[in-house]
Amino acid sequence: MKKRVVVGLSGGVDSSVAAYLLKEQGYDVVGLFMRNWHDTTGTLEGDCPWYDDHMFAELTAKKLDIPFHFIDLSDEYRRRVVDYMFAEYGRGRTPNPDVLCNREIKFDAFLKAALNLGADYVATGHYCRREDIQVGGQTVHRLLAGSDPNKDQSYFLCQLTQEQLSRALFPVGHLLKPEVRRIAAEQKLATAQRKDSQGICFVGKVDLPVFLQQQLKARDGEIIEIPTDWNGYAHYEEITNELSENTVPSPEILEFLATPYLYRPEEGTLEGHHHGAHFFTIGQRKGLQVGGKAEPLFVIATDVQRNILYVGQGQHHPGLYRRALFILPEELHWIRPDLALSPGTHRRFQFRIRYRQPLQGGTLYITPQGGYILFDQPQRGVTAGQFAAWYDGEELIGSGVIHR
Image (tube, rainbow, N blue to C red; front, side, top):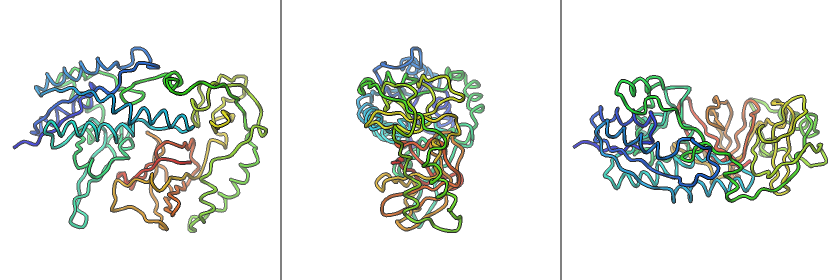
């Protein structure tokens, strides 16, 4: 009897080709389109309206002669992804809704709907790979980077569990994007020339302040510029210079390096005003509306309690860079539980703190207080609320929400 795979047809080329490849491989393929968002507040006009996606998904299913179903998961999406976004921004943190969408919707709510359709597996158009190995007589699922280095999307799946991976197939993960386009064109799929979607998962491109103002009020506050010779930077550099490759740093050193710079308004100069510190994120340049500077201003810190934005001049301002970050114990997640580190141990990995960032060398230290990542080189824009993911070669081992 054929194994049944429910493919999340999104109306894009990647999921369309995934469905085609699975059918060619002999699976019983079913297409399922999910609508996850109704509200257009803040959405930029003409950006991938859901009904266009639905139409292209249905055209693909007809072309491939596979059953097609529709499900509305918008209530789940609002509760488990969008409400989380609002809460995080309100706390002055910057969430990653795409990671949450995969953990909470595509491989949970959607997976449950697929199982109700008799699915053995669910499939998506993600550019990543799954490999099964045996460890101690047990099957372990490895999550590997996609073969296309320009499209690898494993980072977005950094919160998946072994149970979720056991049901997941990624049919295009071994292909390069041009090959996917070529297959779609050869099969005359309607999605062959569609542009890739951008913006928030299932919402699309948004004017973020307008979108967030659905629940977060605008509040006028000050923009304070911190000079490059701020006193705290010299002390930070002194500590980092004392680090040795062969010595495990003390808990005090790790804590110091993972603590964000703490500025006071009197340590800088007033340069302008904004409409809400919670609408900005570390490293942001747009939206400050302060001109007349030799170099552009970038956000280096946000104080949502006092509603102050701290900015620095130039993309190499020291306030943009840090050597370490901290993750709470309950936020440490291991895709490979068999490789989880216990308190008092450490291991070198390659790290990524945002999508498309080249992998960065460093060490993960596990303490009773939580996890510290000490990078080999200072990292730009370490942002609370984002996900740090760690890799061993091409395998994604674990991840965690950056606490600070």
